[in-house]
Length: 444
Image: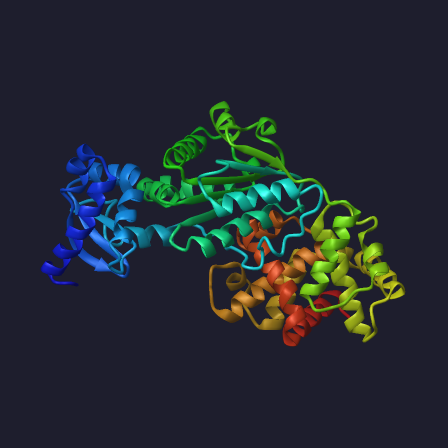
């Protein structure tokens, strides 16, 4: 802990800058009375006289106070408030809040550069980039809707990744409507409502995926309504995705619907044939696997709207090429997709239970551990391979796979699926493990 004289010196510089940014009445009422008590990392710890004072500062003056700290150029970039006897503003409050709530991971490979924008997605792509480049200043909220598998989540992650790169001091929270509901229920049962509100409202960017699953529960929508108002009043960015526009979400209250419609609503359209081929070329390039144009055209035809299905067709062809040690040709591609259809017919008796049993047996893991919350590296890898195989062999929805694997969120399953998809192309050992387990399941 710095000496009192050092703390007083630091705080004197900060408060002088803050006085220039905050109105005289507000500065005298709330900022002037703060007392510096410590420095933690790049944050100065300030004591406030009451929860009301601390809450008012966080709501109305936090951004200007941070600006004052940065302008002082004293090696600090943020602040924390503590209040003696408070259950909310404590030294360990922020860490406790971070550990209490569910975290939806950001996929670092989902960037704007890796997103192939076609004629049906150029507008939403441009809107997402504008938000990422100037959060809170352009389209707020940004509401993206479209069918499953078209790239909504990719764009969400791309926004988060761009903001992290361009504005490293901004706090971005990416979650799902399911996580929001479960966190709210936990906060009610555990009587931690203050931490819940702190977690979701003390951010610069709030991103909620799959808002169409929002339940018609009064308290849930009440919390989201107030969180929305709190953030938008401070020009904090809000990004939402759904499979339909706000007016078609039957469970949505009118007051939330009007707020969602108050920003930019953009839809993402299914890719045309040209865009499908461009996506396949990009995916093949990422895997360092050249694919002839006639094969790309074949894969793009009759592939449906879902980009993930498109990628799955490419994966089957690349796998067949490696399995048979043969170059990718149109004949091989047709054979690979025919074999996958035949395999699907043979795999009708494959069940989630068989996949779990095969993974547990192969890696010598207990089923309870696989479905539990353990985070040891070997266990996490086994769990991710299990998720990948369920998605690949059973074509189950991500939500269903998450429920089977211990009630995990669909974004966690998506991350596991995409990671194993990538790793099996880069790591021969993982590719062999996946093939071995697949053969065990199929009893080959």
